[in-house]
Length: 156
Image 1 (tube, rainbow, N blue to C red):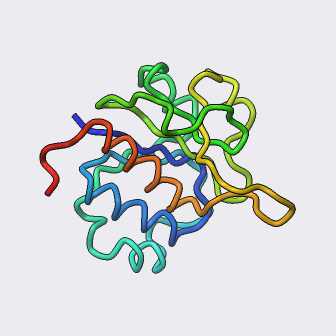
Image 2 (cartoon, rainbow, N blue to C red):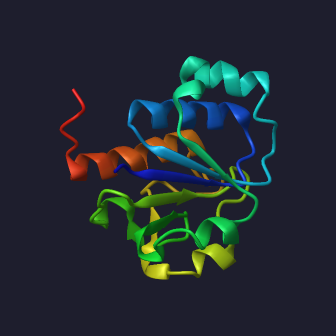
């Protein structure tokens, strides 16, 4: 088994390419929910993902509902700046899904309201000019906290 990263309607190809590379390096499955703000054949995806894309386990869905119906809802953690719980307060387990929204707006209310106990945030400064972290950075922070807790022995 492994962990799962879920990108709901990603918009920036360079972020997605970086996330693909991170997923390959951590044996993590990437779930991508359409529509995307780019084509998967774009040069920026290939540039940031380098040659890792060919080794990635990527699963595509035409809607959030299509994705949501296939997996255990209790294993889904929704990353949002609007959550009360910190991402490090969760006890992650193998097979969990870390769900992230689009760069410009984050996860919509209809997704955040599915299971508010599973909404988590990455602590950061908030003021008039700081809204959120970069998506690729947020994925890495969340994923490596989960991996730290699971203590994967296969990693050097």
